[in-house]
Image (cartoon, rainbow, N blue to C red; front, side, top):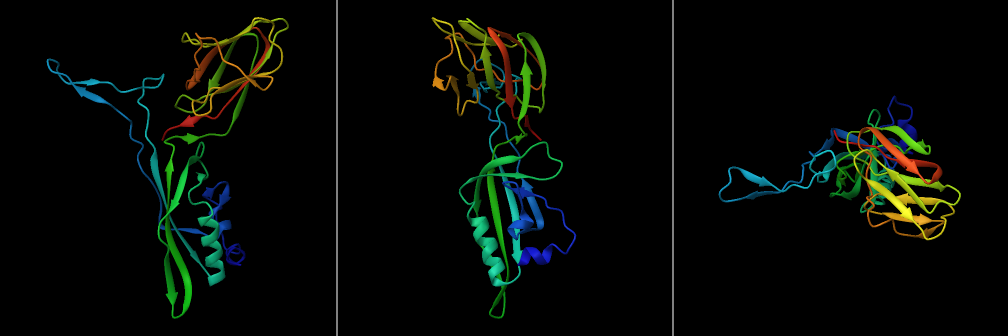
Length: 260
């Protein structure tokens, strides 16, 4: 196998697709390597008669930064060896085409995530033997690096946690209600409250996913709604002062977001 022959040579098993080193997929980077396009802010400007300049209608996150659009990541790849080796490499990579993949390498504070697509294969031949193939793989990626999951415990009352990354991120809460509690809430230091209230005492585990793409609140696995005044608030980069009421204990998990 091509990979077995390569293993005799010094190499670094970087980068990885879905956690698998390219070497183990029988692929290598060409001299063009990996190209990471810019992440451009999504802005909205409006001309207004009688006013100097333009009116900024840009939607911003809680830090005041404009939301970023996706970025394109291009991997310039090749496979060498016998025809069976090359076919295996093509098959493995093509299996990922159209799917959401992760891309990472040593030293990054997370991984890029997005949908992968393949360009045309450029086969190289010597006589009637195929000896190599080249291809460009592109990923329509989230603008930020998505870090590993971090868990933090909260106690009743005030707790301060330090959120990693440099962009707001969305936590998942797991809360154990206090005995007899009819209202459970979590507050931040910026006027946001996330609360659940019942006519009777709330019992069982509460799980709250705040991610806008898959937001839900469950009590004992049953879907419920927060109070009308509630906000699904993110964690801001750095220190976050959180206040828990109506619960004996709670924890939150999050994946830090880092824009570079």
